Image (cartoon, rainbow, N blue to C red; front, top):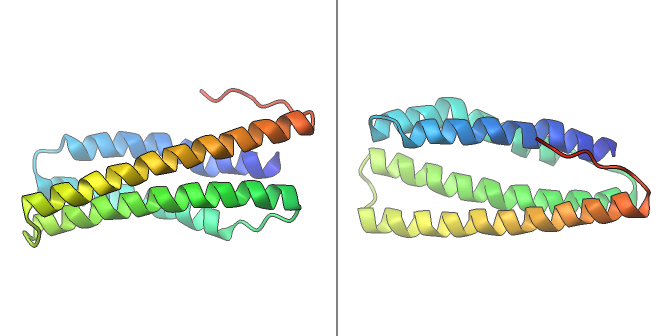
Length: 141
């Protein structure tokens, strides 16, 4: 449970803030402003999540298995974020065509969907562990 609680505190809680900043970026007045928000506000949070996950070294085998599911999920999500961030940078310096940007953005969206599927697998694993070890999971919200 300690591992899962750390995950919720250090990852899930930051996701809400990331989603808010992402909306702010998408609704910004210019592409340059969007890049500024992503570079200075969003990217540091995304990097914090990645660094947190990379720093975890759980001991019990059952927690290692759960951790590997979460790492796989976060790595895929991080890759999708980086793809979108790179496209935004290239759009600002005009080194990518609109068609190329659209293609990469679609691929990034597929990665986000893949990360979501991996999150569901990890959530199911946590529910299975909670049942197996008679633990009670609190609803997030």
